[in-house]
Length: 187
Image 1 (cartoon, rainbow, N blue to C red):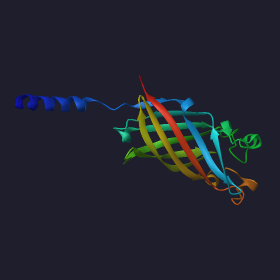
Image 2 (cartoon, helix red, strand yellow):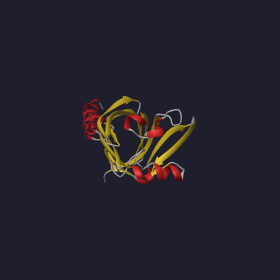
Image 3 (cartoon, helix red, strand yellow):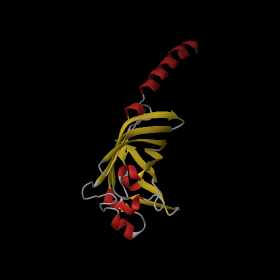
Image 4 (cartoon, rainbow, N blue to C red):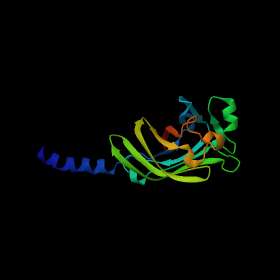
């Protein structure tokens, strides 16, 4: 028995070390969401962007090698109010004629422990690019990976809501961005 253990244990360790974690890179847009929250006259409101494209590579065993790029069709905004939805693509808001998309590109992703991670990168909206840190969680459900996270930004840093909408007493400066992305591994 001792001889068997002497050979079996190293063989099992060799097999275990050769198993690689899955790399999740196929984002399922229909199961994913991009939501924003804000306050207008101190009333909390939410909206979504209904069209966005995600390119991602994530292996939980190698978070430092992970990458993410999110392109957001800013004209796909849905605030739940048709008047606001018509106004948002305009020059005072997103100016989608000149800047049709928003974009986040990660520069690094690091593990924080306990299935928690942090993505650092650049967010570009309305021609302005600023650093953003987005904490998120990761969990695996079968062949799918679920990424949930959120971060805050100040809309006026990106010149979103100019003119009379720059008054933060009417429309708060802080906007929370919440994301839920579902991805599967390449087959």
